[in-house]
Image (cartoon, rainbow, N blue to C red; front, top):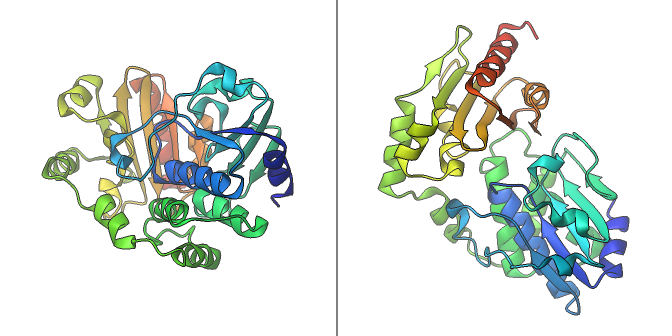
Length: 313
């Protein structure tokens, strides 16, 4: 499956790795993991990582992004990870590269690169990058393994989501043989500051429900600013405060920003990806997102989710 990807890597001396904006653990884990796999396996190559950052995952070792001049892209290979659509890629200079490759596990939205490997059977892009290393016999250091394992944890919900498969555990087992501290990962991922716990409590108190029991939270721009937290924390970080309410099969978190309304959609039962794609987003069947233009559009999306819960779509 990865023959073309490996051939591209062998043919280029400079490799620049991209992933999606507002990175989660899977985006960063796959990016950091692949960087070290390539550096350790091909020490003669220059391997760089680019993109925006979020404080939520700053605990991940070697998570600082590189400062890359435009000139670095000349004659370089750009690899895009964990991204289903061009508009979601952090740093659009990937188009300046001589060759582009994508490795992704989301439902296909559009062609992004010249060489593409997309496989929705993987719970995470980190799992797919791990499979790439295994299939190609590449070097996976403890740091690379820890980064990839972190992404597997976050995108599988600690191996609870139904995207988790027997292959997930095979890849996780391979990574754990590299001897890193899983306790260190969990301590940083799930031990929160009191301010974050209080923020979660505030969001819980703001949950609303549609007629068909779709749970939702809408945060205006002024409200978002008053919380003093970044958009990732308010959007993706808060969507699952609604995840364990009995009788709720679909939940959605709307967050106004200067660039639009961030929308995170989740479901324990239905394929909500069709709705995300309708509004220019994407993701997985039961976990997707989009960036909307207005509150009015957000309410239209909410009504579409209400119809799914009602069985009309």
